[in-house]
Image (cartoon, rainbow, N blue to C red; front, side, top):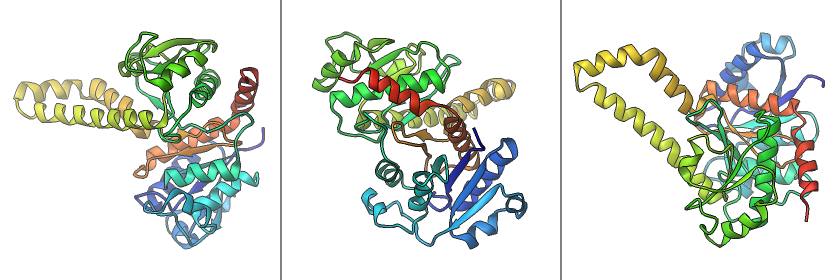
Length: 334
């Protein structure tokens, strides 16, 4: 395919445009793609080195408005001069293959769903994220916040989309799929998961109900949940990871032998541990099931997170994942 173009919302992040533009330049230095930076041109130019413009690696689309975190997600539809609206429109108008934003996640999901549109047979697009496991391979959790009130059919579609993503993006030949529940037994769960369980049984690779611990032990590759539950799992996991690292630091400071041991383990053990649980290593979460690509990053994303979010967008755009998802959904259509 021709060179991939990524539209980037430079104004929406909590930390301002500086880490977003820094992450962009790091990405441009490591891989080939074209970037469309959307936001206040004067602000962008104050951070962007001129040579990225000179070699046509970067284009700027100027706009004055920003969707703030205090705005309702649906307000973004009215703010047509906002950076996220115009970035999404680049994908809608086929000027870009993907959009990356660290801004208002609800606004990005709303705009991506309504302006870019959904793939055929997708009722509600889920947000998917990679989770660390004790094995080398990551697991994929979806939905983590796009669809808080789900029907069984939504979870069924999530499983199909997650399986396709695991197979064609994560390169897992026969991904194992689990339905997040309060027990492994087939009879466990609430009304939603029990109904969904009966639908998911027909999908290749479905192993049944799984518990929260199975997200991290490598037992399963794709974990399906409603967006309310998935978001709580994600935020809890991030909190636990941060707390464990901080507790380790506090206890290391309490004794000389612990400090010596920590120094010996710093490079191989602690560095690898931090890398495995660091959100910046993943960069962002793809919104699956839209007729394009949208990668949604944390509002507090640093340059490394933005760089890796861009890498995700480039990889997604170069893949044939959306065609695969459409084919899978058509095959499983009731």
